[in-house]
Structures are given as C-alpha cells and as structure tokens.
Image (tube, rainbow, N blue to C red; front, side, top):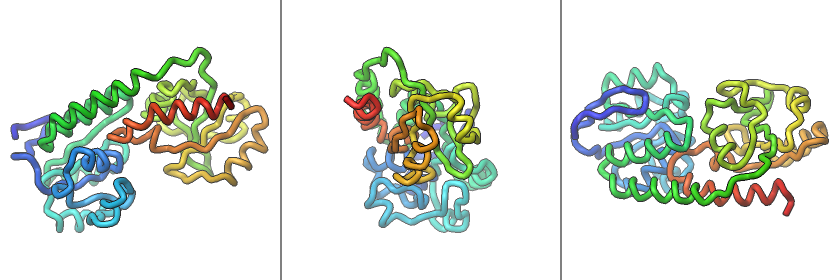
Amino acid sequence: MPSCTDQTGRTLSPGSHPSRIISLVPSQTELLASLGLEEEVVGITRFCIHPERWFQKKARVGGTKQANLARIHSLAPDLILANREENERDQVEELARYYPVWVSDIATLADALDMILRVGRLVGREPAARQLAGEIQQHFNTLEPVARPPRACYLIWQSPYMTVGSDSFIHAMMEVAGLENIFRDRLRYPIVTWEEIRDRRPDLVLLSSEPFPFKASHQADLQSRLAGSRVLLVDGTRFSWYGSRLMESPAYFRRLRTAWTGS
C-alpha cells in the first residue's frame, strides 16, 4: 500500500494491508470488528468493551491514556490505530518511531464518516467501509429536525462535574439529536458547578454512562437540586463513539426525544 495521511495530517507508509493491528481507541476497535478483521486485530485496550468476544479474548495493552508499550512491542504490530484526543501524544509519538500509527481527529459526524472510509482503505476493507458509512449517513438523514430544541447540559464526570464544549464530538451529536448545548460557549471539557448549571436553567441535564458511570443515585441527587430541569441517564456510547456504533445513534436519539417530552 502506498503512503497515506491520517486525520492529523501525518503521513505514514504501512506497506501492504496490515495483518497485526492494535487499536487504542474503543470505538475504532468496534469498527474493525464490524469490518470483519477478526484475525488481524491482535491487541486492544481494557476500555475496548465492544464487541464482547474481543474484550474477552484479545490481548490487552493497557488503557487509552496509559498504554503498555512493552506489551505493544511484544505483539509486533504492523499498524496501530490511535486518536488525537483519547490517547497521549507522547506515547503516540514514541510508538510512531517503530510502527505505522494512524491517528484520527474527530469533532463532527462528517469527520467520523471520513475516518470510517479512510480506515477501510487502510485495512483492505474499502467496500465494506463505504457501505457502512453510507448506511450511517442514511440513518442520520432520517432524523427529523426539532422545532424548539431543549436547552441541555451533558455531564461526563462527577467530582468535579465536567461537561462538553462546542468543539467536541459529543456537542455535535447533541445538535444532531435536537438539543441545544447550554455550554456551547466553552471549549473541550470544562469543569462546572451544579450552581452554574442551575443558573443557566437547562430544560434537560443528561448524565452519561461514560467515562464516569452515572447511576440512579446521582440522578436523584442532581434532580433534587435542579428542580427546574429534568435529569436523565443516557447511554454515552450513542453520543461519543464515532465508529460503527453510529448506526444505532439516530434510533436512540428518537427514543430519547420521547423520554424528554414524556410522550
């Protein structure tokens, strides 16, 4: 395979289609499974929980932020998939000294679809990737616009509370889902207090299942302090995973609309 460029503008030359792939990104691990790379993927992180069969049997190479470099070296990969946000830059650069490392950089649905197509070409599954990206786009095209988007706060962490700014993929998915992000004036993942949330008077407060696993107890606690808002638990993978799981996000957003309207 000739040289290619990843989504950060880095050029790499992976050679022929890779046969020993390590994924450091949970959503891209699931994408590789969807593309049929059962034998080619030799290593994943401990956060790569989908598909379940891979989580149970594939070699684990540490976490997304603390990859085990010695374990990676022992697996002798001929391609590593990483992400600009989810993985540590120093580790990515160190690994790139020895192996082709393809880095994604995703803030929008268009970025995610581009990633799927590029990874498909990279791993020799271009037709399957093209079909997958097309079907995902079709599903999103069927989402009806919301006349009056509810004002929403999406929380990803507790103690301290952390939300999402306008340059995040979750923000883009909130907009697609028909929600107005009350912290769209912030960037990345700002820390906020429950008083700040209260003062912005959201219609909805969404508690994500990841990276912090919000539970019913957290929901009840915040609901007691935010009487003017409706607090809901949501599946974070539908908002933040940018691989093949996107196929299921539009249907999930429709169900969520029913939950927030109560109809």
